Length: 283
Image (cartoon, rainbow, N blue to C red; front, side):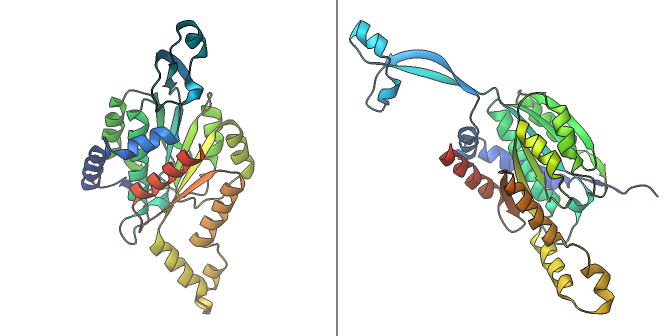
């Protein structure tokens, strides 16, 4: 018997996402994203007259000695960044207990990151994975790429496959990516983590783990775990969703990976914005 197929989300969901992205396109989120994830360097642009708001560290003292006027150096940020947005499409992401579903939350986050990355001109690739890389869109920095990927995702159907081998994505990314990149991994992380693969990847690239949490699924797991009847004995021996998630979160944090938990009861936009602002403060 073949695997079941399903759409990533309904057309109504995609239409709502496009409207939301349009509404934030000229607001603070894009600025927060750009500031939090800076480019790789600065290119000299010009000298201009000093104003009282400028830092004295920017003053061009060579020009001052020559012209006896204060000039400051202006630079343009080189955003030659490489971003990889990875979306988990394994079976556990499609469990539907209570809206919003995990897949909808994850897809909304992935589209927001894709939109923001291309909006500021970062080299961006997008991939879907389960036990292997299922769909790969190569690096592009043209903003029109967003609409091409969006249209493809809207019409895409995927096989529902178990998540046991999802950890292999770390090995795949290590082999695929030749230049240093920032990887955004959007998943419920209900799979075993191979720490050696994880460590190899993070030595070469930056990784942000965006963990999707279904509070209702976690509540049901907790209820099952607390049942003491004999009929549930086999279930009690299994590691629950709740336990797997927290074990993996601990492993990710141990390797100094940013973990952004997005709950089904939280607004993904505000959660991501708070994370970006915290990154900006650190930077």
